[in-house]
Length: 223
Image 1 (cartoon, rainbow, N blue to C red):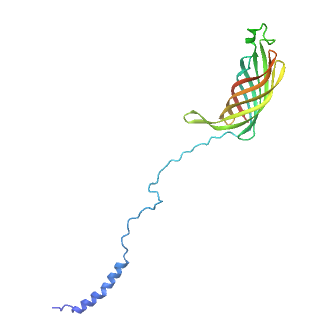
Image 2 (image 1 turned 90 degrees about the vertical axis):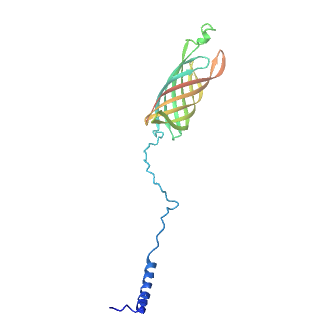
């Protein structure tokens, strides 16, 4: 029968192994706590589908030519159809110049009910005018025709000077008004306009300054 190891041999072996176990325990890292997201890190990454869109803008073509028709009220002498043409130049996106020619007719029908023969040689007399004006676009925007269809537009103010030919006389004329353009394409637009043409006429021997309102609409082409 083998003799058990002396007690001091076991003690020495235990003393030699213990430092090795302690060193291994120190080298083993402690369990790391669960990683917390940074304060500025977004936890949920949204999946947003980007939509393409077209930015509307006023076309940059500088020269315009248009035709218009509407109603012209000659003070004291009734309202009749007016027609004409306009030629314009856009100096900048905001400022433009315009020359316009129009013609209509005036009637003395009301005076013929009071005065035999009226005040004109004929019951209706031709009235023509031409003016050179300057304008400014004050409210550019867009107009929706359908749910998903919009076109650029601009509200403008305009004023000018010119001449009116009426009853074989030329009369100095000042005008002022406002209007709106809606672009159907880069080369065409619808235009509505209201202007007051101010000039003096002789009414029954008295010189009077008259306010002659014109409401018109038409199509304008750009190139």
